[in-house]
Image 1: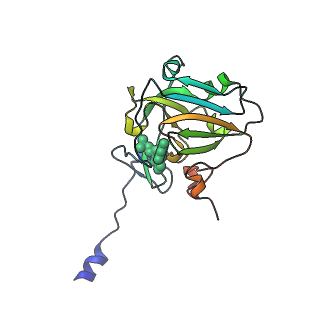
Image 2: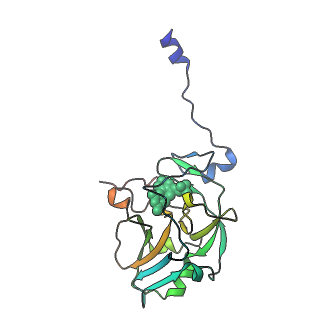
Image 3: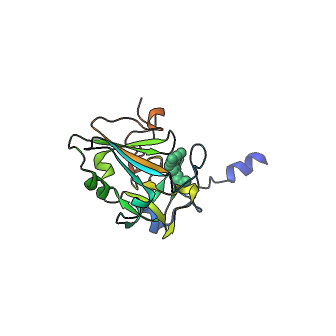
Length: 206
Ligand SMILES: Nc1nc2c(c(=O)[nH]1)N[C@H]1C(S)=C(S)[C@@H](COP(=O)(O)O)O[C@H]1N2
Ligand SMILES: [Mo]
């Protein structure tokens, strides 16, 4: 009986609606609710002491307060999240400062080829400068027109739509411009440096 039942059973795979198929990278399933995933604790946000630092290959290190951040122009863009643990979360509208705006503002030395996005504490993620400057990259303060919630990275998070979501650093506190690449938090553990979900670049080849 048990054997028969087993033979008759089909492995159920979640089906991806045809209309969304081209938005879901290989090996991913669509998450029905927006998951919350991160290392460690959700940091407290104090607008009085919060700052954002730009460092590395720029004329002089910069520090912006939360008040100053409010003066930056914003863009509003779609951006899906693809977690390497195989969920994809679609239909997010992000509002924030575009990476290109920040780059142009701070006069980066042309020798810079890479960036490290620094989160609160020890979390970070690296990107080639070209990936960072992609027109869809936003340093978001708002999600679906509401301020970001603490668990999703308030007050500012990176959104890097075409890379696995560990590069979309929550609680973003700074950007560092570098001539040479330097692995971030997960990249140092063997996760893919390039992290392109469309090519399933989950882990760095041995
Ligand atoms: N600072 C910080 N940012 C982070 C992480 C983290 O641990 N710390 N986890 C990353 C991972 S692995 C994922 S999948 C996304 C999840 O974002 P969400 O919780 O808003 O869905 O955040 C990314 N950003
Ligand atoms: Mo993730």
